[in-house]
Amino acid sequence: MRHDLDHHEGQRVSRRRLIAGIGSVGLAGLLAACGRDSGGTVTTSTGETVSPQATASTSADLTALFAEAGTCTLTASTTQGPYYFDADKIRSDIREDREGTRLRVAIRVQDSEQCGPLANAVVEIWHCDAEGLYSGAEAQSSGAGGAQGGGAPGGGTPPSGAPGGTPPSGGPAGGTPPSGAPGGGAAPGGGSEGSAADLTPTDDKRYLRGAQVTNSDGIVEFTTIWPGWYRGRTTHIHAMVHVDNNRVLTTQMMFDEALNTKVYAAAPYSAHTGRDTFNDNDTIYADSMLMKVVADGDGYLGVLNFSVDADQDGS
Image 1: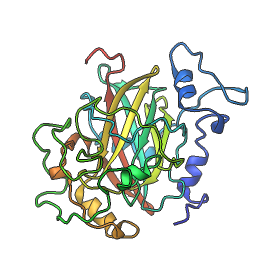
Image 2 (image 1 turned 180 degrees about the horizontal axis):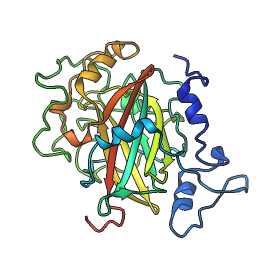
Image 3 (image 1 turned 135 degrees about the horizontal axis):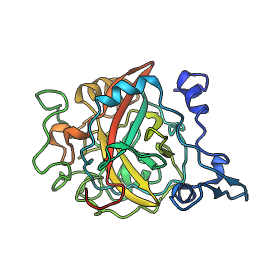
Image 4 (image 1 turned 120 degrees about the horizontal axis):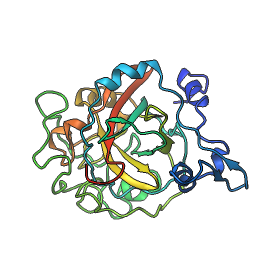
């Protein structure tokens, strides 16, 4: 699939330059520039002083969707999983060369106490490709690094009942991850918050990873592909929110199973068979993590509210 820059989404993203000198400022510099005491500037690797520019003003098609995408109830935290690292990719379009169904992701970050938008927060997302592989960790996520493969047929059919399923007991923090998952029996993303350390990348790939700064409405937007799957976990996207250089939320976003089934019936997803874990039997899934998804041209638009404890006082 060729990602044509003349496509309407490409035009939207090209107008949304996150930061001047984008190629020479990493996540650490961006976090510093977005801090309260930073003065809002950062020096690039070429010596230029630049100011972060947040995602452009909120487009009209998002307003109604966000009204249906959750409340200011504190968003549940989950583990970051074994494949997180600072990818130093400050960008809206995170696809690179990955093929798949186009997915536009919009996230609104709100302060859980004030129930208002949180501007100048940094939001990172990362997820696997259509084959279940993570950039920076292709060997591990394919099974070549000692884990069981994410692509090995495992059988199974989607659980009966309404798409999206019923959250398993134990809530969004999950319990014991299912066996047979990548990572020597622990599903990526499984376990409890803080159980996984940041990964040291084992390859130079950085596809499907990126960060953005929230605008005055607390919103960031990304262009990616519909995530694939791997054994032991339902379809998901990881997200992390930074405020004043602190990680204030690590969570995951998930999708209605009816849409997963529809997307996975087409190439390139259809070549990856044997999906064994769905929303109904995932150890982390919760209804509050479901994105509100609508058709968007040749792909989909998914939105979700994140309500964060910005001052980390537990409320």
